[in-house]
Length: 190
Length: 190
Figure 1 (cartoon, rainbow over the protein chains, first blue to last red):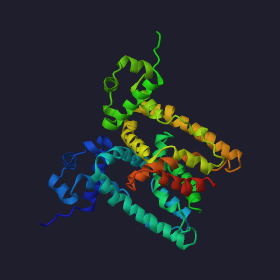
Figure 2: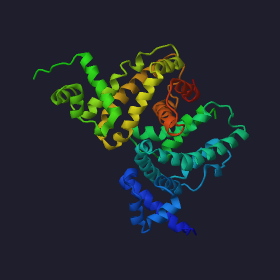
Figure 3: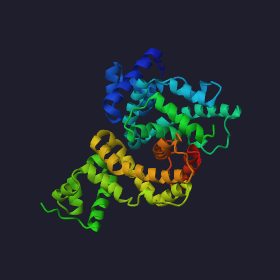
Figure 4: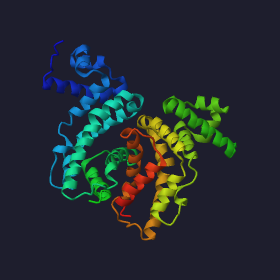
């Protein structure tokens, strides 16, 4: 069967509509019917293009982050981390955090959503992070056997989760940059 | 009105029943009726003793952790952290993690639950942690101006959340002790 390709603009519109719906109603209440109706497309198109709701949702989440971490190369690990954070302004961070709150429960109830998140969002970010770290090792900034290396995702997830849960404050660049300087770089011995 | 005090045994039974119900049905579906029926007590007693569902739930969560961090004093910060982790065996950690998963969504929907968690569980633990850290400062192990000090909760929350979300593995003592040695102590310059 010939597959009609969507234009990048149309694809972008669909992803934005999915993200809006996610923020409005959450993952569980987001249906392919609602996406089809909001975007004036057919459910058949949605399923042909994305296969399933978890995949569509994760692709939509990934849509906002087109540049991979591995493309960042400022010449120092600290510069790379700060450059990565500079890409997302505070308003966007709060919108991302709202999405993540909406997904945090759904992830536990929907193994296929967690699987799609791992494959499409977490793994690519981890690969980009590995390349960024490898360059720091190559420059002699970072020891490849540093025991904190495998825990960078844990440190980052903690910053996001505890900021809201314990501090009751929104995520912002200044906080995350301070966390990188106070926690992540010292743990890495940089 | 004279207030009938529950015996500590009876109070413990009630808390265990609340925790069982939380694991079985989650926070939203847990009702005071269900607790009353499961424990063969009256709703009036439950409300008189605990005031509200969030308070009862958080007191029940706190019940399993009677010893405060501040009572731990092994003579070194590493010893204190490891001693704190040794108190909870792997089976109990998994049960605690299941509870936390059940609460993570409810916390965002129920501000009064988050408030009770902060006041009754998070704040006391933070106070205990502060005392444990103060002793490390007094011994000269830890600089009081270390910028990672304020981020210890973030580092800990990250260990708990990312272990399950990213690694898809259960929490256990060996992982948390390695995380303390690889991340928390180096970030603190210890």
